Image (cartoon, rainbow, N blue to C red; front, side, top):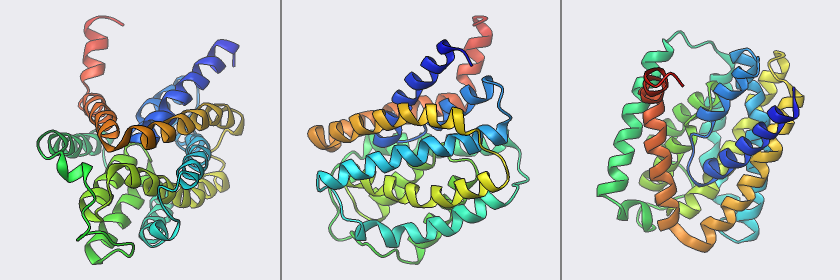
Length: 259
């Protein structure tokens, strides 16, 4: 791998680490790039988990030092996601990628509209809903989010944010901190499964992780200093771009302009 590619990988990691920490869907960018480097799709999927794991270690540590959340607030919510992630990383899902992407895109558009027309749902802590132990509905939702996260990762942060804000009652800053903690825990198990099956390129993974870690550190500072409104804007941008990607708009434009 050339120094140019290494530099591109680090810069991409910084951007993705920033986006993942404040919203999610950064893996929609890293996975295609890793595949463009010559990695098979399953190896790209596994290699990306190294960056995700270390990025979240930095993000969680930074949020914890800034007293945004306590570990006890995330551990119960993480349990169903961990169970789901182990299952998701262990099975081969027999579903068309195109169908799955379209379903995800529709959900992301719905979340985008909620952010536009119901901003207070995302910006204010909902004390009546706030809980650290998931009820039955939350358990089921987090379980399936975990399956998805264990299987492919890309976009899982957005779904977790929706569950933590709209379901558990956290504001966006605390939800991001808890989200990183949950993903950190289930990524440990998912990555172990990918490593066991030989689907990880450690060299590329750690180079990407260097960028992700820096991006996560910067983003955690921005989130606390600028508050939920700033995070909402980043989330809006991430949802919009992720939806365009999943609906194939980018591919259409690239083909149309021969890019």
